[in-house]
Image (tube, rainbow, N blue to C red; front, side):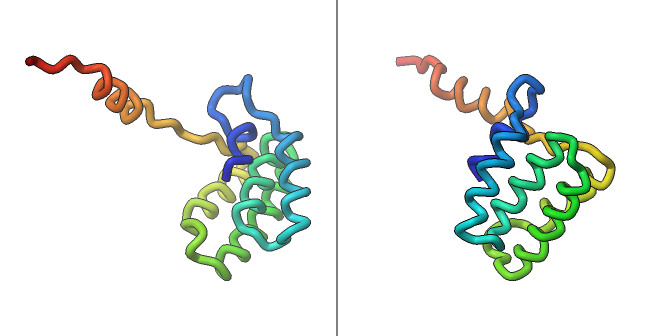
Length: 112
């Protein structure tokens, strides 16, 4: 899922759906039924505003995932499909509380 990062990063200044479309199309040449790559491609299409392609590609990802259910949770892909049907791009949610907790844990000073 590493190719999703530039297309779905939560801050508008980072997404680059066009580059992710190109990358995902290259990756699909190896396996046109890879649900992760199809999911990434759908996300990138949505980011570029091509919601018809996003919906079609996400439906392919869901169908491909039914053949490989160990790869990901189908409910997540279906939720993204609903976003694309509403003409909304998918953005990753970064849980800062956990990260802050990890940082605090590393920075805490212990008593001797």
